[in-house]
Image (cartoon, rainbow, N blue to C red; front, side, top):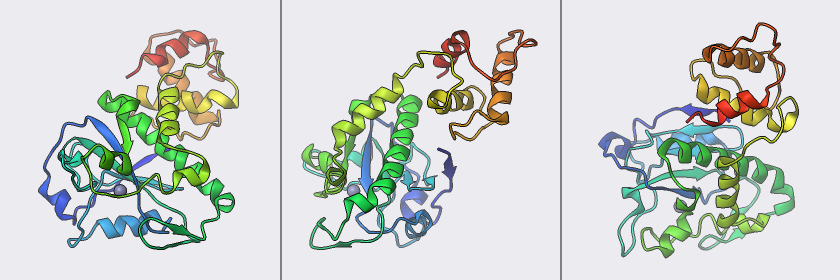
Length: 258
Ligand SMILES: [Zn+2]
């Protein structure tokens, strides 16, 4: 997952440029059947916009639309204050092919048909949350959705994302667990097979941000070069090694990259 930085410079919240110290993450979904990340971006990037979040998570793209430490206009407020003062917030785009009735009731939502879309945005949202947890030293337990933020008294009364996730038999506990699993994940065997290549690519990108490789799970030439560059940066002699696989020593070094 690549995070594409594209700021909503026309948005009045962005222009205020107030800052926060992130203490957690609030997950939203848009509440409109609109999967096009660019349409959502354009709606946020208006001088008349009344809300602003840090990122838009779609099936194909993840846009970072404000610096992570800008104060968002994401969740409103409740009797105990506002999550906007301390939470990084992102919106997940919902698919098309259904309608909204009153409130957050989805009419004609075919969960079976939407499953592959859901799986994509679920994975993108988890990857973004993992990135943010690592970046700001946040616990997976600090991740809540808008409806949970309302119950905590720090947000307006919205149903997202729990009006949607359960249609795919998922809830926020599943989300937090998936993030925690990914954060603590350590490959148990040398990496040369498909299952761990994404982990390797994410770690290599962290190790060397100036040589970004696509996180596609394929052990191609770019990944191989990144492995060799990592070995070289460590001062290891890799002259006899091909870079086609990664052993336990390299894995251990990659784990320690923050
Ligand atoms: Zn929301």
